Image 1 (spheres, rainbow, N blue to C red):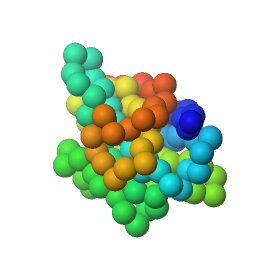
Image 2 (image 1 turned 180 degrees about the horizontal axis):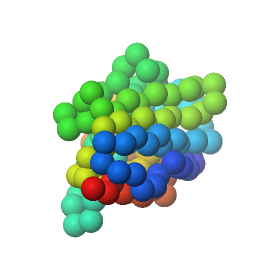
Image 3 (image 1 turned 60 degrees about the vertical axis):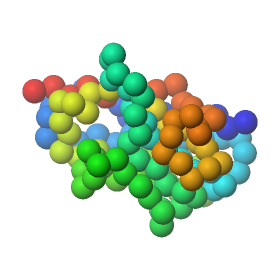
Length: 122
């Protein structure tokens, strides 16, 4: 079992920044791919960013490239998502997730946090 707890969501104006954090406990954190996903009202959950066991292997959705950065600290069992140049369409609940596989598919992620709301205002 892996337990995940997100923090750092909130309300910010378009163009601003937020940093989300995810704290993990349970099995060996460094063995897992850590991903961030988001779900807006009425939409399916979608992939945002992931890294595979370390920051040397990361992957981003096209719509966040150049704006978001995923980073992890295997010593502290945390993974962060730095979000810059936020847009109205970034409004969603953001979830941290863990998978033993190198994947961007939500169905491959067995462990999920409870989610944190990110709201972008104009």
